[in-house]
Length: 352
Length: 263
Ligand SMILES: Nc1ncnc2c1ncn2[C@@H]1O[C@H](COP(=O)(O)OP(=O)(O)OP(=O)(O)O)[C@@H](O)[C@H]1O
Ligand SMILES: [Mg+2]
Image (cartoon, rainbow over all chains, first blue to last red; front, side):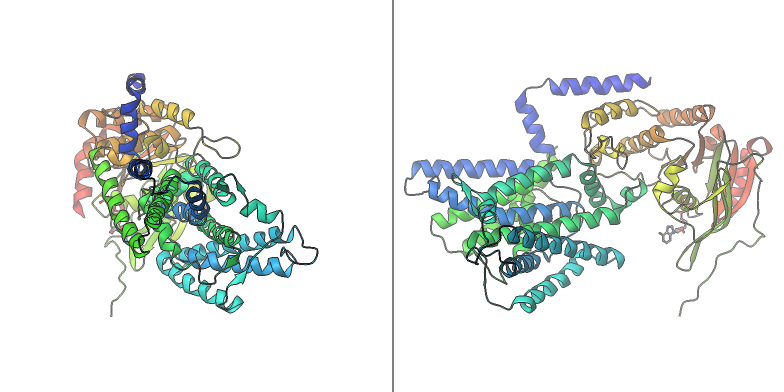
């Protein structure tokens, strides 16, 4: 009797595996949250490439354009990886935009103080790295702090981090003031984070490496499994023996660390840091995750979704820049896109 | 102004039966308060080796509260718990897991957005030394597990999201999980509420088999016929305390029914 049921399942699996690839692909699109965004991104990309081939004036495929786009994606993408993981664990951090600026300012200031500026006399090669470690540590600790306050007092993370957002923004001004800060670290730091391989900017390579690392963490490591469980059904996770506090602290810390890294990478790219540069980024990062199939309530999402959600937003921004549309079109487009992506995901899920 | 009212039984609390051999798990005078509300009031309860205990009582009597306390997710406000005669503190699920207790919760306790396999191995993932999961091994094991205890038709993909399953199928997954990991004691909180007649019979027969293999069970149910089919002892609760306790051979279904509906 026992084996009969198991054999039945094995047969059903074999049957499914022997089906043609196309129907497996359709299944994947229907059952995975990132299915909708994959279809949407592929469609947009095909249309844009077709348009670029048809109208030579539309320079989407030019080397210069590709290089610029690949330079721009990483900061938001890196931040979105952290924000996405935290969303899966069922929490938000609205302060990542402020942390992005604060940690970058601290890193840049320390780099200069420790003689890591490229123009400093006998520029130190290790100073930029040490300064970066401090910046990342601050981001990580800040994230963990948000978690502890949220969990200890049992308040929504939306509120804790709304407060933290203003606090870190104020701390940035207190620490540095409102002027932009020059950030030109010495070699090899400058090349490691600001160089490029062909058209591919170093920051993009870091983003992709991190995406792969996060993929293994989230989809293959047990802590990733616990993120989904705690975000999907907290009570069930507790009942089955997962420590939700520990899990959420790790998720918050990851989000804080990624925000700091995003700020530093962005600073290296433009050689300066604006104290208010991160304002609003937290919402754009959440938007990228939602477009990528993340559930606002937690428990659902994927790394592929985050990457494609970010890439889709930048593709649209790029297209609008190329056709010289005023900036507000971008916001209108992204606004519409969020709603369309969620509707699409729901529609696909309902059919399955 | 609200006054805090302690709901206590009118009669003197019954101590009930005393264990004649060292119980696997014993709760002495456990009390659970939710604010001013007393969900468990100086309750005494034990599970002996090789026995099936029926935990009965009206809605809101405190059965699930007691089950969750034995699962470690609902620590007592006061009172003491003993595992194999040694005092223990059940403050989280890991504590009860160490005592070999496995639970089928009344509210199922599955994560809808995760697959059947991931739900079965949640918190007990098969991993390598660095904590990376072995998906193939878990899937293979899940297929085996789904074939034991209850066979629910329609489950043919262990990687299907639990949210897409029917109520009975979900319950079957929760049962399969608990049954696979059980060691000393299996707690079943209304495990058959969504099962068909055939699968209910299977599960009850399975609980009897478990006893023969040395795993004791606590069965919470509103169906006294089911309870009489498998239980060796009955504990009737009302308003957070024990109001009646008897061995199967010393009582009748009528008497137990009387005590359940009396309060
Ligand atoms: N977290 C909580 N906070 C406040 N009161 C609670 C909580 N959990 C349970 N209660 C109360 O404790 C009492 C006992 O609940 P419990 O779930 O143990 O009942 P039960 O015997 O399992 O009932 P049923 O047969 O309906 O499942 C109920 O009155 C319930 O309202
Ligand atoms: Mg109950």
